[in-house]
Length: 271
Image (cartoon, rainbow, N blue to C red; front, side, top):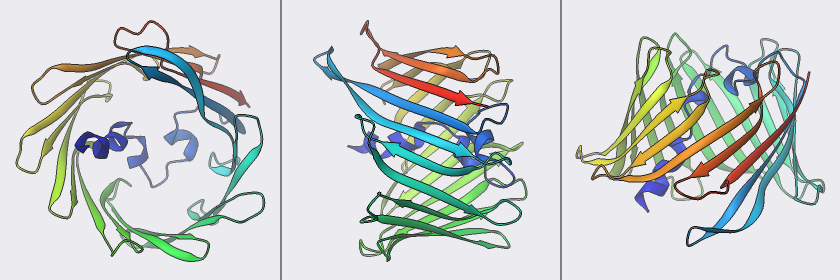
């Protein structure tokens, strides 16, 4: 149960950058396309046997000329439109609002952004009820150094994250929620690729370790996850197919000794 809390932060570090970083740069998509369509299919695995594949998402993301998202459409497995998300920017391309809604507008999720001298504030509302308040502090390089997320519908429970940088690289994250929390230490290779993440609890006990290898396009091709005893838990291998602009069009992930892929991600990129 503890690892589940950590899993979302282990995906990748690209979301840490904020100031003067476009959405295309964050997503590592090159040559300024105006549309990226992406679908992700995940295997349903039982006792190391893949029984079926289930589509997790299918999206179309449209970008403006500055490289930021204009709107994003979410589709069902049958191709029906589920949600549309729109993004509004200031004249200097700072995100000031995003709105997610279904076609009938029965569900509307709005995020409003307000900028301060040392960061910004994100307020999330669902059907006009404010649910989450996020406070961010950034340094002079545009990196997030502090984040406090408060749930306004759950007794104001909050999570605090503090990031530490060296030479503009994230080297440590401390996460606290109530009396619990954890610490992540990051290591990089000479190409500034994040090759290792080590998680400790607040008493400095090792929880897990993740190591990565990258290809020549700086995409992850191997991930090794070790438990607190140093035993290998999972070994993920990832294969890519690229277009002429070094953007990947297909990403296939394998795990442990399962011969078939555990996930497939397909992209169509229009320039």
